[in-house]
Length: 245
Image 1: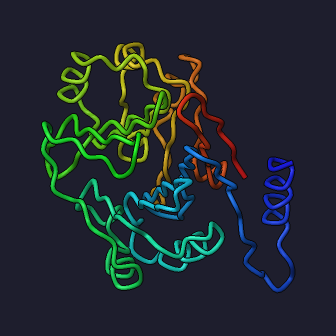
Image 2: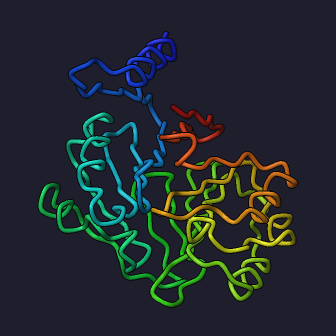
């Protein structure tokens, strides 16, 4: 019944009223469930982590001039508080709405990273910086058996380092730099063996065609926010589902 109600809400969102009334989306998270919500901003990256306990973490804030979009998505997903703001880069596509988020929600901000220092936003959720360089951080985010590899770098150096780590249990790969460059390589994809890849939108740009072909050839389900809209991963400590609308 809960899933039926959820998809009814999704359907109402896809067919808004003439007054463009904002429809609320209740993720109906039960004990030990979490939703990872990749927001389809017109420019930049922003990801919400909503836990059944009510705690909400925001990873990056999108590019400048997307504040109105971000606000609308927050309203749709019942975001009334942001407990923590995590920043993975100083670039404008990731920090464009920091001032608004800070003023509105007053979250604790995490932006200083060391590869040896792990971070636990809430129970069973572990963030491990794997590669820190040029002001960006590539990290592993793990909740139970689900592992999201959040790539902020796209070059040989990061891939060579990560291929020395035990990352064969990666489920979801967030592609770095909006998929504009020809990384990751085939050898790296084989090493981490993800089932899903996420690519955010950079205004006026499109993902590298060779990269997309490589992802498809590796039988990885590729989700671009510019094509699929909002991408939601709902998970517990053992399994996960991917939904788009």
